[in-house]
Length: 516
Length: 106
Image (cartoon, rainbow over all chains, first blue to last red; front, side, top):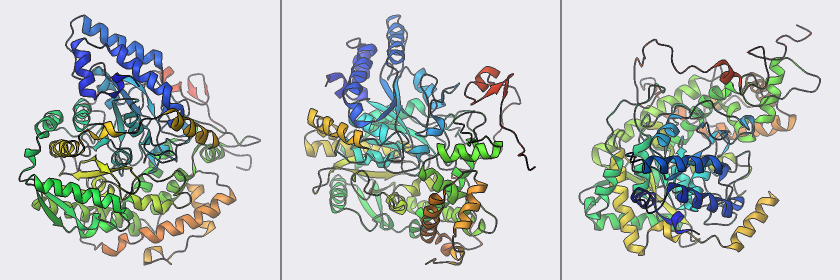
């Protein structure tokens, strides 16, 4: 493995800026790494080496011409396939969009390109971001580099694995109910769901519009913050985009790097987020992290949020309802797949056949559920009540943030599980999202960062921090301090403890993939 | 068993077939069967939203409300006809081509 792929984005950017390394060399090293490991991991759905290298050479030429470039200019970036891109296909993990080429870039992608980042490929995901394991991708599951035959979490398993397995230093994700934070936890990486509206959703293939948020993934808190600064900000193309003067997240991360900054921080632990079924090794690491924080002078406060226990229920009404409406656009007319029934048919039967063939089982399940929740006679009992629960959860958060600065919880109740282990039981995946969903319902920001491995299986455990809306910087400040405490404890940054993907691992993963 | 009045209507295969028609998804009989049982089980878990709500609680449709988001009424960001049709399954004479709208019996 080239040393160029083992650097943090901040280090790589500094070497590119100093001229020690070219963007072309950095990009080539990552493309080589993808060639070496990705047929086993399946984190990428599309790459285009020539186009990535051409973009990298363009950055090198601009730098050589003396142009002043952004801090991350020349650094490779993986892009979740939910974001449309002009240089590669965009499928959102679905057969119904196979081969789709967007005429424009999503705003987050356009901003990354404008900052000089080099698009290195599109990452795998659960179809239309519906799932917690990436097993619902129409293009096969992504494997967790920490666990042969283990899921990477989801829906953004591809982006999380891309950074975890050194295929890219940075990645973009989307988080509707935990799709950035939960895969970060399961792969030992960092991911942030910004405040709703903090990053434009223009060009993000919509799942549930009142919950979806685009955000950054990386191996360190600072790298995540650097990417956050690139993509954040108002966009007139997205009417839910916030016109707000965001402070620099990177500056917050740098200020927080001294654990002394934790002194006096009030950290809430919500009783209702310490849900039944939390794996013992996850619980232990979480309590250890709290003890480390207390030792630095942070104050741990128990919080009661009585309505959180209704969050999963409300979410699995609101999400399917919005999704059933958003996915109506896949009608076989303007883009995407068209399947004509045998012997022809009307546009309506073509549409029904197309959607039958083009959507996977989970997508059909959620569309049918959403159609039910919105149908006459049930609307008030289901969708209406769910939206009221949303208000109650926001009130719980508001009351909590009167007492504390941030809320902490395990990001996910368990470490990575085996591929196929949740098959046939959709509720099992749904309940697994209980810790991440409340932030989406309330629109507040959340971060997941690694705090160690679970003693029973040696797999990564994530800590989630949440802050009030608009206070994303608080997460980076505290996250950076905790990251430092963990590195001091382990005598190494967590990402450096990721397993080597040796030939035996890759061969076994390839064999398993072939058997899928 | 359903826990609340909201879930008191049993999900039958006919319900699922009707929903599939509304959602324009041609489900196979096997899919109708498995979705009937999935939907029943999922609704049992999620129907509890109506347990805690009272009429005085306002609904939240958007986590961070904004009002009157407008832009100047100026044409911008327009796709060319070629771009708009580039991903169409079928296009003719600069238009999307679709199957017949009406069936023979109509």
